[in-house]
Image (tube, rainbow, N blue to C red):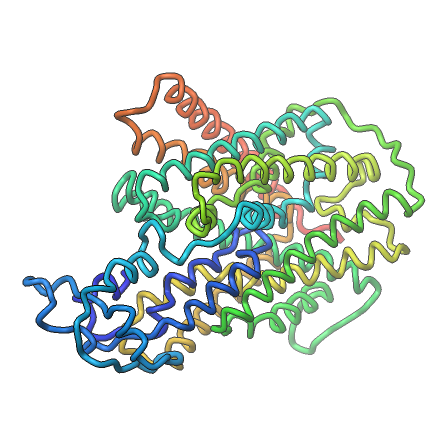
Length: 516
């Protein structure tokens, strides 16, 4: 709850509260690689820094609504009299007439149509969306194509088209209710509190499972980078690979204590660079690596389709952040065009990557194609290190949604240091739990496929279709209704089959134990 909009619930407003809306812009795709475009983000942060905070005595008693539940905020002239505050310090401003600035400030701070001074251009929005979609999923597309057959590329392209359509549906839901600021808000508008709770549950599940996948990826690639190295610690019965992973996670652990948004944004830019660098190294390997691209790809392996469908859908699951991109646009009416351009570019990239990797490595392709690249090439070393560094830039970013919700639930009277301590401690414990789980089930392709089939397919296809049907029920046409119901049924079926297939493969791998 934003205290500037519902000040009857609190007796003062801090700088952190003033900037709460801006923090939502740092949401990352739980498998994605970038938050908002750096230039746009920095402009908004400068604007946020100019907002002064309010103390309860800034509100004029004679201008309150009779029931005391709605307060008004100072006009532009009164804002100028306030001192800019830092962190939790509360500013003081002169009493006076405060009715004039109500609408303008509410539009900026709350979930209104113009909240957060939306100024993202069409080009920036496309960059943002592409950045959200390119991430961990790119490592597994060659493996998925090789195991599903080249005909499974139609499934990859089809899921890209469907996810572009469901992105459009989210835009229509946001257009219908401009107070919706995130995925959970859309769930609330469609199905009430149950919709919000279910949406939040799926989002947090995806964050958790994606972080497990990132940690497994980190472990696998560290083992390859330091092949031949032996590390041991007395009284700790862990393999060299596990010890290296523990050390890497401990190095990344302090990032969970970051509160400075500029530092977190810097990490997101690093994630983008690493993702594109990985793709470029594969292209360079194909051109300059001396490998003949003559591996035969099977036509279709139907029995593997349910399992690889989760890998495909995970690659397109960035929908939890799309409402933030929508709200940041100067012209939200172009959001559908942004979705079409972005998903077209990403689908082409994924398809090219899948065929390139499958033709280069054939049946020997690993679930992460970086592990199949020739060890002696400089491109391989670059790709491996980029893959190692990528998860280490993700932990703070992926934890950001949980951290934001956690801080909002803490008492407003709590000090800044105590807030940081609670958030950092919970984040550290969560990451250590994720580390333990990742070391226990080091099977990247099955965990990633399970994440896609169990969680991502709901967030990317089922929920947007259901939200749209519920919100537009009185006006929805019969063909559109049939289309959306069909997508819900087919996606649910694919999700169930994929979950069963990935779960069986995961349990069998656990019973066999990790390969030496």
